[in-house]
Image 1: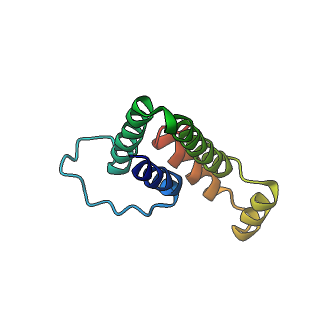
Image 2 (image 1 turned 90 degrees about the vertical axis):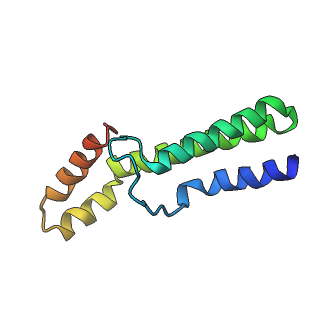
Image 3 (image 1 turned 120 degrees about the vertical axis):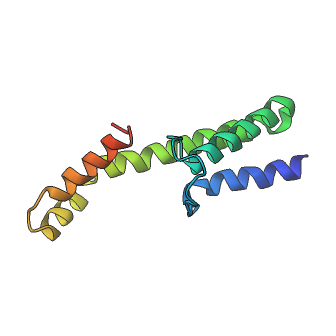
Length: 113
């Protein structure tokens, strides 16, 4: 069981870099995207394995914490880009803040702020 768990933990580590191809879910009324379903089910499976196999518990929990930290950092970097990146974007937009406004509207629409 442990070799399988190590492969699953490697998949967890690579999860943020997965390129998702949305195949237009069958249930268009479902507000939860396919990748959110997958991430939830995948992490639930890992949590169940951690609960049953104490030898991998710390690795699973640490992997999940690292994933949450990484995703949180990416979101925060997107919301509050560094000053240097902000100046570059501002300059590239000719001093126009419309891109920042669109970014903010996108985050609001997705319930991230």
